[in-house]
Amino acid sequence: MKDIRAVPTAVVAGACVAQLIDNITYTISFACLPHLFEDMKLASESKIGLVAAMFGVGGVLTSSLSGFISDRLKSRKLPLVVGSVGYAVCGCVLFFSHKLWHLMLYRLLNGMASGLVYPISTAAVGDVYPHKLLGLQMAMLNMFNNAGYMIGPIVGGVVYDHAGVRGVSTVIMVIGSLLSLILGFGIKEPLLIHDNLMEQAEVASELSSEKEKTITEEIEIVESKDIPLWKLVLKWRVLLASIITLSLGTLNSSLDNMLGIHVKDTFKVTSSKAGLLYVLNGGVSILLSMPTGSAVDWIIGRHGEIARGYIQIIGLLLTSGAVFTIGMSDSFATILGVEAWLAASNLLVNIPVMSSFGDFVNSLRLNSMAQCYGIFNSFWSLSSTFAPPIATWLYTRIGFRSTVCGLLSGLCILCACLILGETIWQIRKRI
Image 1 (tube, rainbow, N blue to C red):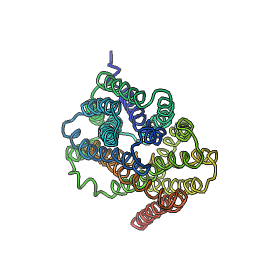
Image 2 (image 1 turned 45 degrees about the vertical axis):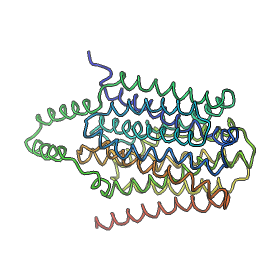
Image 3 (image 1 turned 180 degrees about the vertical axis):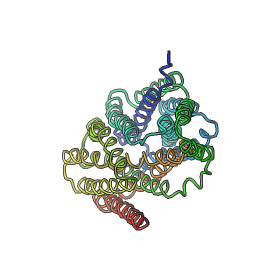
Image 4 (image 1 turned 180 degrees about the horizontal axis):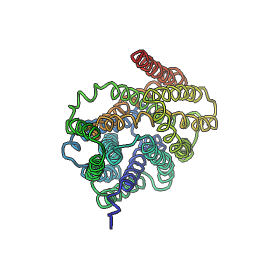
């Protein structure tokens, strides 16, 4: 009887749970952090951005190494289990926090754990689907990721209102411990599953023509090679996707940190009510992730890689419009409604970008899946490092409207122009 833990769907299920918990631990403090600062009488609101930035610092530290180490050790489970335990550790730090540097350490450890779990769980899914476009699989991960984005802030707000910071930290410790058990005992090593799938494909190829065998042998030569990390970053498809990831991460990190402060200061909403912003955003993303992923795979499969750029351009223009509207909104209800628009347009950018890393590795049969998604998470974490303190500083200096309507909306337009330029260059190269 086949071990159910060794089928690709089991790995996908484990990765989905991992990203659900990863985003819960990331967002659980969004709604309550401004109130936590106020209750602890720690510092001004501008320091909230500094605490938030420590998550990005931790993510960059581990993301930049986790992929390289995982590919070299030929193991996905080890970094996943270590990262899961890291969530429990950061929850323990938060439990005893009563100073500013305690909160900074908590977010640093949270980011380091995420830098292990997020890219490696994503790479594990790419490993077990070596012969498919990954849009649908990335959409599934994105769906659970957004479920965490939806659940985390509302749970954090409600638990903090009733049990304080120790209640929030207890939740983090429990779910981190549960994740380590699920990943440690619930799935087989994804790279072993990958090797079995490749062996099955090789056996099938032996039944085909001599010409097909020759092509397979040539592919195997490419597959056995490893690209150095610096060369991988400079591959144009990887570099462009990384730039878009950095920009999208900057946008979302800035909004995540400013919106909680803005609605508290301007509309006097409670922490649990502020969590509704993230519930709506996550709910729309959950509903639309799978249809969007299927559509992205179908369009790229039918029209080629160049269609990926057109999808991203449309998504960025729609995102820019949503961000501008949020900046101009004069009521909490309006912002709440536009969050649905923002969530839908974000999917049109995020899913093609996420799948482009894995599709690139699988198309060339490289042993660099974890490194590619380590690059992806490094750029996202980098944006989480510098964006929150800059955004909160700008919020206190020039206000919410100028920051959002001018800088963040303009960033989306700039990225759309960059992709358009690259698409035109690809078209001209074909002529």
